[in-house]
Length: 523
Image (cartoon, rainbow, N blue to C red; front, top):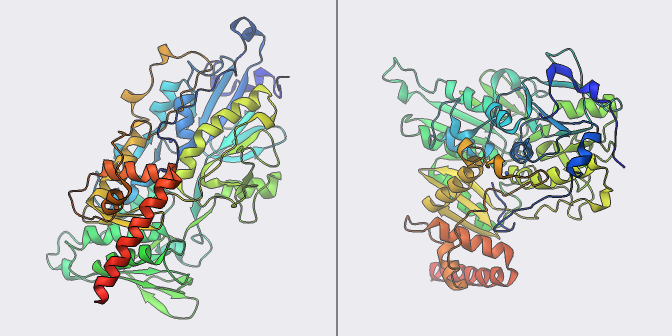
C-alpha cells in the first residue's frame, strides 16, 4: 500500500510545481545499476498522491542522487528539493591539491566545486539556498533559517557532513586557529592568510611556525601540502604536527609508516605525540601536559565531529544517534528510529555491520549513493525493507595523500607506494568523480524513461589494460620513477581488490622483494 503521510497542498511552499559519486578499488570495474519498477503504469499515475523528497546537504552521496533523480527518470508525482546554505559543494578529495597549488588556488575554482544551482536546474529539482535549523520528525516538516514557512516531506535524507572535533569547545581554538571544516572555508582562509608581506623584501627570512593540530590523514596531508608549496618562497618555514596518539597511521603497517616518516623528514616536518591540546592562546598552543608550542599560523585538523543539526535532532526530537552524535542508520541507510529519515556520508553511522561502522572518509559517501537512491524510492513506494539494498562498505580502501613536489603517496594491502604516478592516479580519480557533474557529461534526458536510474559511478570508464603477471605487478607497485604508467598500476590495484588469488600472489612477490632489499642492506 502506498504511504500517504501528507496532503499535497502542504507541499506548495515557495510555489513549487508537481514535476519539479578517494575511490574504493574493490568495487566493480563497471558499476551500473538500473533501478526499475518503482513507477506504476502511466494510466494509474493520475491517481497517485504527490510525494515530496527533501535532501538536506549537497554532500558526495546527494550530489550523485541529483544526477540520477532528474525529472525525466523520477516518478511524475515525486517532487524533490535540495536544501543547502552553500550554492556549491566543495569536493574534499581535491582540497589538499588545491592548497598545494596543483589546481587553481582561487576559492571559487570550479575544479573543486560542484555547482548545486546548475545541477538542480538541469535535474528539475528545487534548490533552497538556506540552512536547516530544525526538523519536526513527527509532523515531518523542516524549518529553515531564512524562510518562515516549514517544508513538509514524505521522506528526508541528510548528507550534511561533519565539523572539526574540539574546535568549538577547546578554549582559544575558535579565535586563533583555522579549522579544516567546512572545507570551502578552509581553502578561503588559507588563501587569505598572509604568509608573506608583499612590501617587505626581507620577509622571506622571517620565521613561519606552522602548527597543525591533529595527526590524522587530513592533518598529515595539509602539513605536507602547505610546507611543500611555501618552502621554496619562505626560507624559514617550520611545521609541527601535534598528534594526541602514540604514532601516525596506526592502522597501517611499519612499511607504510616508514614511507610517511621519510617524506616528513624531507620536508622538515616535526611530529609530537601524546600532544593533546588544552587551550590555544594568541601565539602558543598549550598542551594538556603543560608544555607549550609556539606558532605564527595554526590549523585545527583534529578529526571529525558530528554536525550540530544531528545533535539538536537527537536531544530535541528523539532522532536515534550514537553517543558521539552521529545519526544511527541501518545498513539500508534508513534511520533506526524514524522510517522516513535517511542519512549518508560523514553524518551517518551504519549500525549492525559485523566490522562496525566505517571510518569517516569520502569514499564511503560516494559508494553509498546508489544504495540511498534505491532505498528511498522503495520506501516511498511502500515496499518492505526486507527487499531493500544493503550497503556493505569495504573493510579496507585505497588511501592517497598529496605529499608535494607533484607527488603523492598511497597505501593499500599493506603496500606503500609513492611517486608522480601516484599523484597522477589520485588526480584521475578525483577528476573522474567531478566530471560526473559537468554539464556536458550529464545524461541526455530525452533518451531516458521513467523509472530508469543509471547509477554509473566515476570509475566505470577506466581503461581496462592487459593485466600484468603477479611478479611484474609487484615490481611496478614498488617503483617511484616518472616512467610508471598510473593506468597500469590502477589496473593492478583494482584486480588485487577483486581477485583474492591474484592479490596473494602479488603480495608474495612484494614481501619477497622487500626481504631481499633488507638482506642486501644488512650485507
